[in-house]
Image (cartoon, rainbow, N blue to C red):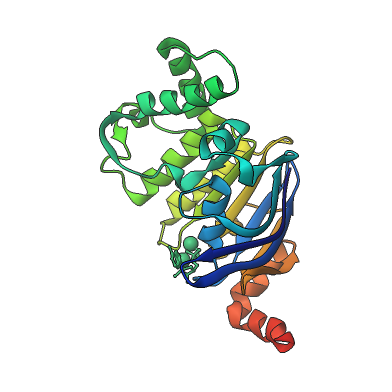
Length: 252
Ligand code: ADP
Ligand code: MG
Ligand code: MG
């Protein structure tokens, strides 16, 4: 589904990603771990097409299409969802209204008919119930006064409604409480499906206690330097990233 080959990204004067390769198949959950400043968020931004994040080299294929040639809106319509794309607070704009606009924009871009507010409401209520989320989420302003945990729940809700093919979650290093982590994990586990893939970016192993990834990668030195199963996350937890640096550095 997603194939990244020899990706290079330069920010300002610095090479941040330096030949990154990644292969994600439909139905899989991949975790990307790595030390602070390794370029994890940069990878997420690049994939979503955020302004200022362009590839200096390499290819990204998504469902056989050249992702880098697509506008951010085209990427969203093709089913690429970046969880931190919508954490912005938009006071006064109703959450349901906002989501319907995003959802309908994607349908329109795919040449599908838009849903009216009744049809959409029916749909979001189903999603809320599947995810065990509270109704009140529908009525509040977009992320307005939301706690960190509520923003995360809202991201999962957005994800459920938009039904992306590829969901990228950047679990920023901010300290989420266990309840919020579990809500994110439950959401991901509920929304796993054979034709949907997840890339979960996280600094800590914590989240992976609740989401069982199929594949774990370590991003360091601008590349994926190690790939393994869930046990790799545990090794990192025990030995820290220094352990990995010792294993990677000798070639330098
Ligand atoms: P991570 O998410 O792994 O902690 P980031 O992708 O946020 O890492 O950042 C990678 C590196 O890129 C950091 O050293 C950061 O300071 C740098 N960086 C991020 N944005 C910019 C920018 N706009 N210009 C220059 N350097 C940047
Ligand atoms: Mg960071
Ligand atoms: Mg980051």
